[in-house]
Image (cartoon, rainbow over all chains, first blue to last red; front, top):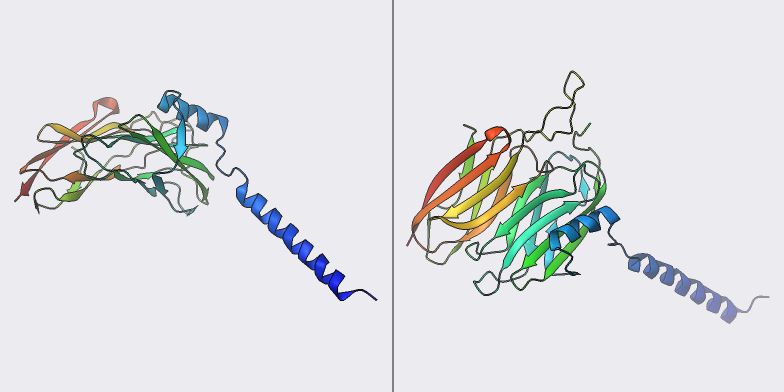
Length: 153
Length: 106
């Protein structure tokens, strides 16, 4: 006869193990950049360190048509002469070229928000980088699934 | 002349932050696609877009082949005073176009 308490303990251990696996998946470095993408980012920043945060890269996680994908990059930062966002750039992992678009902003642009439409060749990782007037760089990395690729062949 | 569409409020209050949207008709041929004869079509893209407010730069962008056909940009602008906004697009094969829009600030 199996002890009910032992069974309960086993159940709890199993649940805890399952939770551990779940957390492990969630905490895996999802935003580890591929070498090429990291290289493009380094070329843009001139080797300066980048940090995650401040930037919000808005793109549909599931893209049905890669020919025209609306994106919006928002930087949570004031736009004054003393403190502003100087540049916003977007890089991709698997298009023929790493660069997507690079925007330069001045304090006269009242809000650090840029929207445009881009092409995506395949399911891949994208990164948005913002350069602030204090010289720091902030990033946001997203993964998108593309069902219909942009014509590149 | 390519067709360009520019949207912004015709009038704004001083200090108000307004959204500017600009679109231009352009194929943005990437240079990675093959034509009907199987040969790669040469690249023909807009490489640079800029917006100036009474001559002072507000927003500019470097475009790459990954920007969709008919490039569209939306950004913000602080309306400081009545004046003109000059939009410039420059690209391959000597493409250059300038559009001017006036904004009234009260």
